[in-house]
Length: 302
Image (cartoon, rainbow, N blue to C red; front, side, top):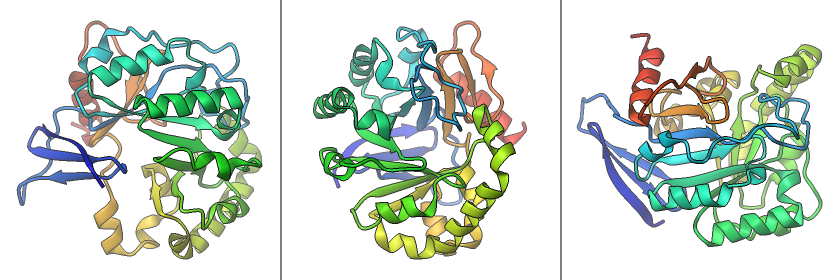
């Protein structure tokens, strides 16, 4: 494990490592007061040709792309982690110039793509090239309800891969197929937004059943993956505080949404605590740190 960088954020020192590990250092009995976000979920396009039935963003093949020259991007601090998504971010016509711009600012770019796009030869080769150039650090591959033949052979070409699944939607058989391949797994909560709201209205019982089965199997699953992580929505939906041993939970929990993170929809020029919360317009000249302090106020109710 090699350290990528260290920075000061308010009263906290943060260290970032090449395997995705993050460590915070703060004086005993102090409460963290970050001045800017450690990580940002950044939507850069609403274009996607898959038409997934649970797409929270309602992405489509005629979706719009964000302006890659938006001035707010200049205010992102070095070593901030960007979780870049969409839509399909690989469809953005200026993706490479955007990634180069972030690279020059020493911003750590991670990207999430759907398994269907990952397996397409042209997109796979593009991802591999951008990763080798250091423009993409971590790659998230969304495998919501199925795998694709040849997936395990191709995924070996990427050193920092995290497999994304969705609690309540991903069936247990997919988790079983992913086991014992030395993979890192991220379990995301189910978003009741966009097409996701329509889907849950039709298949609520299936989602509840899938969550119950996943909860029953979680303890045993930790032995079959390199690592398992959860977003805060999944922590709530799976009642993880009652499933995971308290010492493990307290050690691994990285804070509530809005405490160290924020969401930016660069297509619509909106921001918020996360993509599943209410979003607000980015109006006038703003800095990332200014928007983040607004997020923290909403989070605390101040």
